[in-house]
Length: 324
Image (tube, rainbow, N blue to C red; front, side, top):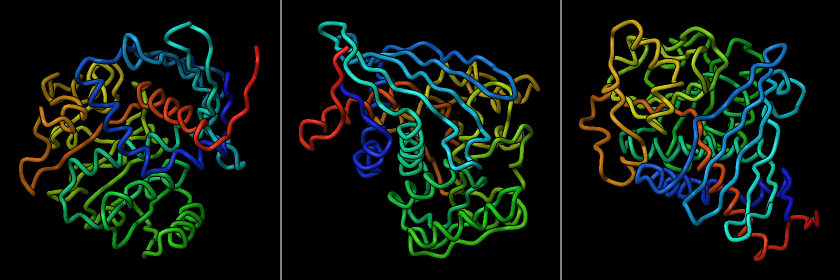
C-alpha cells in the first residue's frame, strides 16, 4: 500500500494536471460510467462533521472512499479544516492499495472543478474575479481560476476585514495582479465577471441585485442541505448546473430552499457540468446569461485525483510503501 502525504499531493496534483482530470471525471459521471452513493455526513459536537463518500470510477476500475472530518475553526490555527484520507482499493484483488491525504486533495480538486466549470460557462472575455470568503477554498479558487481566464483583478470580501486583507496580499504576491478587499458584498461583486462563494454562511449573502448580467457563479461553500450562500431570487434567475444532479436535488441547499418556496422545480437544475463538458448540454446561451455551477463535491473527483497521484509515484519516486 502506498501512503501519499500532504506535501506530496500539493507538489504533484497541480492545477494544470487537476483541471483536465476534473473534466474527464465529470464527463464519466454524466455518461453513467461511474458508481456512487450520496454522501453521508454525521453531525458531531460543536459544529464538527464526519463525512463518508464511497464510489468507483467504473465497474472494473479503481474504487474507494473519502473519509473526512470537518473542523472549521482549524483554519484560523493554521491547520486544514478538512482532514482524512482518500482510500483506494485494487480492482483486481480488492486489496487496499493507497491512502492519500484527503484535505489537500479536497482543497485542490474542488477549486480545479470550479475552474473547469468556469472555463465552460463564463464568458471568454471574463477578467474580473470576486471571491466571497477568505479561507482555504477562497485561496485555491483564485489560483485555479487564474489558470482558465486572464484575470486583471480580484476582489475579496469576508466578515473579518483583516483576514480578507491577508489573503489579498498573499494572492497579489502569488499571481502578480491587483487584488483588493471590499467592505461589503455589494462592493465586492460590482463589475465582477466570475463570483466564487466559499463561505460558511448560514443565510444567503449573494442576492440577484448584486450580480450583473453575464456573470458566472461558482457556489461552493454550502456542501449539504441547510446552510445557504445564494438567495432564491438569484437561483431562479440563473442557468443552474449541478456537479451531480441527484446530489443537488437531495442535498443542494440553495436549490432546495428555492424549491420549497415554490420558485423553481426539479427541471430548473438543467443538468450536470459533465454533460456541458461533453457537449451534450448547452451551457451559456448568450452573453447576458447568469450561469451558476453548484458544487457539492463528488467522490469521483477524489478518486480521479488519487489515481493520478498513485500513477505518478512510479515516475517520480514519492510516497511511502507500507506492508499491512
